[in-house]
Image (cartoon, rainbow, N blue to C red; front, side, top):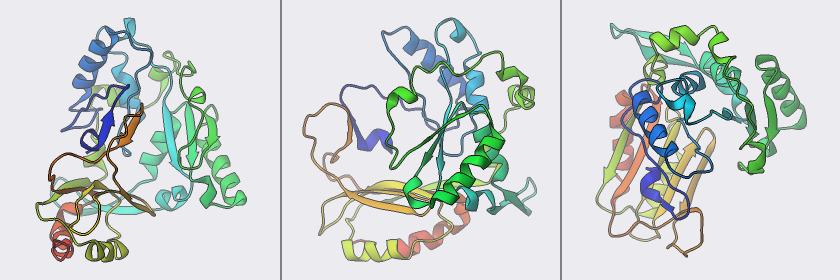
Length: 296
């Protein structure tokens, strides 16, 4: 979805899909990093999914000839300050190998992401009180006393705080208690925590008012959504939902400026939205039924 909606001008974006970095795509990531290392690049930024665990990703940098070509600089985890404690307490229901439902809390995943990071970016700090923010920082420091913590609003932060820090210590990685387990039998977060996704596509353009009504009754079992929506009576838009944040942003034609920006896709591209949630495959029918009223 990002590769389709983001125009690349000065930067180069390499997309890895159909798997997760720590398991099925670890070899792909290794190959791509080794290839990029042969080019004249200042920095390589690897963006994982929101449910990715940093430890298995870090292990990629110990593989093959990569240690001689690329140095892992730092691992950065973005923390949603407005929802962290609610997510910590959240318990989803997933199916075991026999198809039986069982509870699966998100706290272990959130802890893994924080504990193996060098930098924690507390985003959306404008949405919490000073007392709540102080409590969250103390909680994160207890999980990872060594991590640097920065506050941000809408992800705005001086890049120099994140790039070229040299904070990752190669000798400390193998000392982590989960290092050998992940190295020999990496777990796939999507399976462990029951996260599923599906892509909704619709050739006919939507009516804006009807789609807006769908957004106002957003289903709670959808944890993340992203996509491109085409309307018959409104400019096309980019949909992004994460937690309590839901944004519908009108797309614009490219202006030629440098950098990365959302741009209007060419032609009559259909509406395409990716929905992510725990056990969402069983709710697909509900979502498609709710969206059935939107096409013009």
